[in-house]
Length: 406
Length: 188
Image (spheres, rainbow over the protein chains, first blue to last red):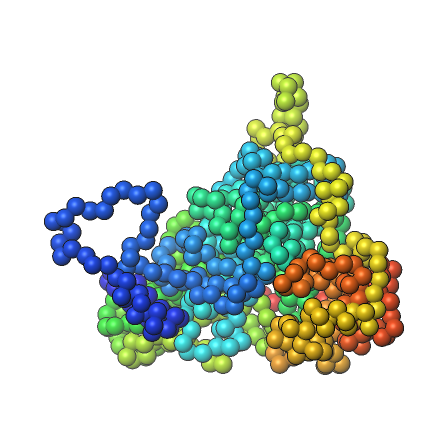
């Protein structure tokens, strides 16, 4: 099996489903005229900015507009890194236009020295680069609250992406301003039109939080917080405040609208969980999965991604018979903490209908739960942190559909 | 930084344990510039449950109703329960807190928000969507009073200001618990 036919097929089916037949016709119409033999004509010259092959047209799927999100095409990606222009989006009042020369980060509150840092100064501090996933805690909602067979990995789990983030540890900045004794939380506030704000436990700053300005080797994309954002490895996307302009250190949480009325988790015992930051372990098969099809019996490589906000993925089990038998999948090295991990499992399809499953286990011993287990713990009405097992039903004709019934 | 100061800073850094501090890093770099009181005042807009951050000013439900009709109706409906954007008004269900059990219940200010001060904080920072940050304190207090009255939490005559708003107890105040997930084999 080669990657190209799968990618192409998935692309066309995905494009047809997401954008409609008109967009598909347009894409086909734009396919370039090629020489019959590329070895017999000179190739294209060098250029200042690379472009994708005109045959490759991966696209996010936007949902909503300024207060909406756009979904990463997980089924069209290889490895673990998400190209920056395909990183998912989730905004609360659109993408602000910020001049990096006028940008500043203010840190104040319970500090010895309230300080303003401009972008050049932030970059002058010792920097670190780390690969981490970033995921909206609403990811997976369609597979829990509004499931249907025609769901792709992109539509279910497209609110997760992995980048190499470069920035300055928040701990370095906090030492610089001198955090006062008794400080336990800090407010992170963005420069968007929602002035989006979240309270963060200060331990995360001392642990691994970054003010990131680099993404996959270049400056952050505007949609990901240009020129600087908070990055809290393994914690729900909303708390990773983009376009960060202010940090206020305090001795209690601020109880903003996002962290109380929105990103909280109603539970079946008639309470609601506050500050549920960590993303529990999760995995999903990205091939074969709708809209891709398995076109023939024989050998196929099942592949997907797994990740945990609590550390490394220690194992991904795959089942090709609806969960009766489970086999550990191969994990692509390096397996990094709080980062997408690529898994692969070779599968010989006999042409009979079956269900494919993946189940992630992280280094704390947490096992990705079934839908029934998760619903038992969280209730049918909960609204975030949907990390249950995603089943993919392979029909006898090779069509693959999402396998959870509403 | 002078060589002597660098040496002292280095010694301090070496004394630090953990925290991601590299052995060669000084305790401080001396980067950045002091924030002025004026700079902090201009950006320090948050309002907390104990009332910290609430500005002078006041408003009532009737004052708020007029602002609501002009600035909020298009997104939140005539009475606050019509949408198309977030539903603001609604106390049902009066008993229990069944949002986890039953996906049919829609969260509103009246049945879900734990702190009244969050209303002030959010409206002044993010609303209205087409002109965020444009409302004056009296207008925000008026809108808060209107929304609390519509949700049957304060009387129609109540005056909301920096003293009264933090004392408003929201119906769902005691329903919120801290995250008890901790990894390991248990699904919570």
